[in-house]
Amino acid sequence: MRVMLDANVHISIALFSTPNMSALLKDIQNNHILVLSDCVLKEVLDTANRKFPNRLVEMNTYINNLQYEYFNSNYDDPTIYPTIRDYKDVPIFASAIQAQVDLFITGDKDFDEVRMDRPRILKPRQYHDEFMK
Image (cartoon, rainbow, N blue to C red; front, side, top):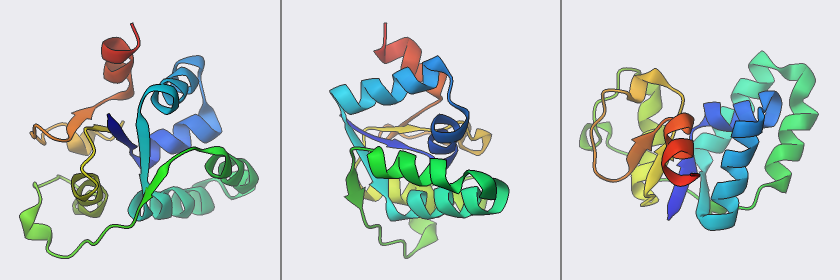
């Protein structure tokens, strides 16, 4: 399967990792294709720069050690994508749709109301419970 992690999941793994989050990343990298879009990467770096400037080395080390397929998104018409409570999340989700990922894993509650067959939207705990038994 093709799996995309939202920026908040990458930041959690890189800077505040728990054994479950580390295991989630390891499972995805061992059993699936991790897709990293330009939108997600930009949000990860912007958020780390703004909120955790003293931890940029850790964030960059994490990104440099990831095994992923890079996807350059082409976000153009926001009206063709599902409505998301926080409009700033639309380009992120649009990149998941464009990259044709099977799973989009996020801790962001703004995605709770989005209903789609593909990509399936999961919380990290849901992925763990369903795929890592």
